[in-house]
Length: 229
Length: 94
View 1 (cartoon, rainbow over the protein chains, first blue to last red):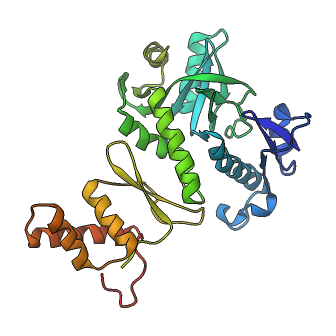
View 2 (cartoon, chains in turn orange, red):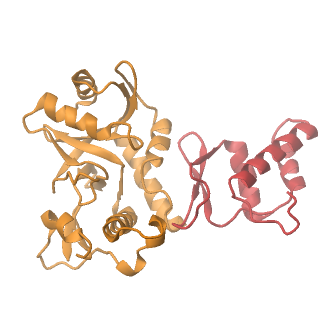
View 3 (spheres, chains in turn cyan, blue):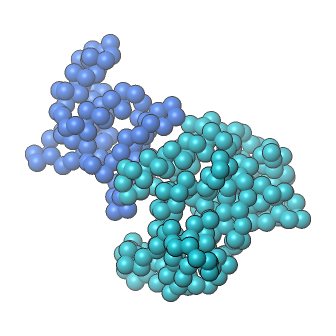
């Protein structure tokens, strides 16, 4: 099943739920695949003794796609990506920190065309010097994604707190935070070098923040007003 | 002793970091950050060396006492041992 994901042609196996997840990404053009996802490389053992085949297919196809993405000036960030006024804002952090809650607050607070393009693992790619965030089929348990891209305005790490405050992170702090929320165990040193080159370039262009917040509209207002470009 | 090949030392912005390679590498669940001194010791260990070589390397670079250098090297090696970066020694000694 050929798909176009983050402007790359990917051959994704249709079985085990991926046909449905990929339905908005199907490609019927003439170009051959940039990335081929291979079921024979799936590692079911990573997911326990009797893993759900759909979970294995989802996780392992994501793993293979994002490992290959590193060769194409890109990487993913574990985050919820919301688009407002044509720009993408990425909210990241560990599981349960409130990423999806925060981007839903953006939709409720700002309305209009504000929308989530990927609720879990947006792809990031540099195209002609501009960093874009992309909707992809790998978007988390609720399946929230749109097959769109938008230039990245900023990244924000979330932290739950009693009151709302936001600060810009130094590039060095930003780097270690991003490393904690992206593909981690690359297959070899060459991939690692591609990835680090991309990441350092990303950090030169894109501001990264930390938002201490309560799950309320005022926090959405604060992050938007600070990050808007 | 020697660093296992499935770890890579890379320059971060104001420090160095050690990243695990390979999907089956179960060591180092969080990134290890090293300063210049740590990175220098790491590079010696990539080549393979013993504790005395590391102590000598520290003494050559820094104005520290031998006792202090030995203590620092032991602490560094213990940390690497804990997170599984060192090849197993046959006799188990550091």
